[in-house]
Length: 417
Image 1: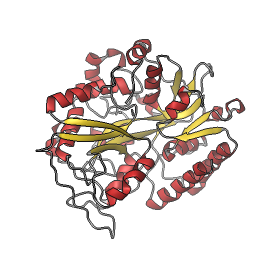
Image 2 (image 1 turned 60 degrees about the vertical axis):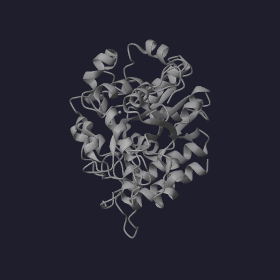
Image 3 (image 1 turned 120 degrees about the horizontal axis):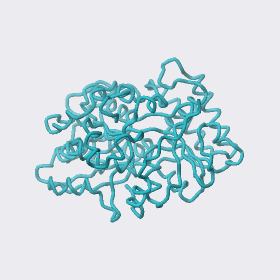
Image 4 (image 1 turned 135 degrees about the vertical axis):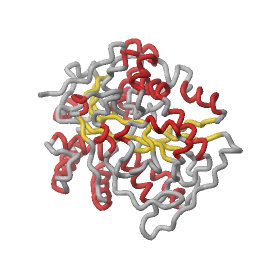
C-alpha cells in the first residue's frame, strides 16, 4: 500500500507565523510507550574498540590519549557544535532554551552551527583529535556510527554520570546501545527520519516512492543526502532490502550504488549535500530530495509558507540518532555535562522538540508537551507511533572493512558528479 505523507500539524499556519523571518539554528526519541526504542538504539555504526580508563577506547596499536584538564571551575564558558535547524530559535536569532540555561547556570555558551554532515566535520577535526588537542568544541552532536568510530579511536572523554542526574530521564531502551553499552561516552540529543521532500507548488500530487525521483520531468532537479547510510539506505529499501538485517552484503549494496551512479551520471541527481540541501530547495534548484524529517517544518517556517511536503517512502525511510559527545581535548567538560543535564529536563526537551520537529529521547517530554503546545502531543515527527515507526529502518552495523569499502564507493560516485 502506498505510504501517505505524515499528518500535517493542525496548527501549521500558526507554526509558520511563529517561525517566519527567523534565522534558524537543526536536527529527537519515542513516545512514553517506548515503541521502537530498541530499534533506534541499534543505529548504524562500526564496532567500538575497548574502552580505556581515562579518555575513549584506544584502538589497537594506538597510544591512549590523555583527556584535557577541565577548567570549568574557573572558566564558565563552553562551545557547543551542532547541525543547523537543530535548536529552538526566535525571530531575533536567539535560542530561548539556551538563553535560559546561560542565565540559570552562569555559563556562557557559544552555539556553533559547524556540522553539515558527519564525514566533513570529522575531516576538519581528525588531526587535532589524533593529537588530543582542542577541536574548538566542548561538546558536539554526531550520529551513532560516527560516535562509534570516535570511541574506538580513543577520541572521547568519559562522561561523569553523577553530574548528569537527569540522565534518569533517558528512555530505557536507549540506555544500552551496542556502540556504547553503558553510555560512558555519549547521550542522545535527537533522533529522526530520512525520507522524501517535494515542492508542493511544482509537484502538487506529492511524492510517495523513490521511483518518482527518477521521473524525466525532474531531471537535474533532484537532491540526495551526503550521508551514505541515509541515501543508500533509502535506495536499498526501494530495492526490497531490509537494511536493518545482517542478511545483506556486497551484492545488495552494489546494486544500490549502481542505481545511485546511474542517476548521478545521467544528471537526474543535481546535488549530494548535507544540511546545505535546504538552500537548494528554497531557491528551487531542486524540486524533490531525500532529506531529514524535522528540517522541512523549519524550512517552511523560515520562508513563511507551507511550501514543502515530507513523507516516508512507501518502501521505507531510515532512522538515526545524534548524540552529545565530549572530545578528548575539550577543556570545559563539567560545563558541557551541566548543559546536557539541562536539556534532559522534560519541559526543556519538549520546548526544543516543538521547534525542531525531531524525536526527543527524554522520557516525560510528551507529557510536558501538553503544556508547551498540545497540538504537538501526537505529532508523528516528534512522537511517532507504531505504524509510523514500521515505515522506517536503521542501517545495520557495519564492520570496519565494510564501512571503509562502502563509504569509498559512495564517495567515488559523488566525486565523479
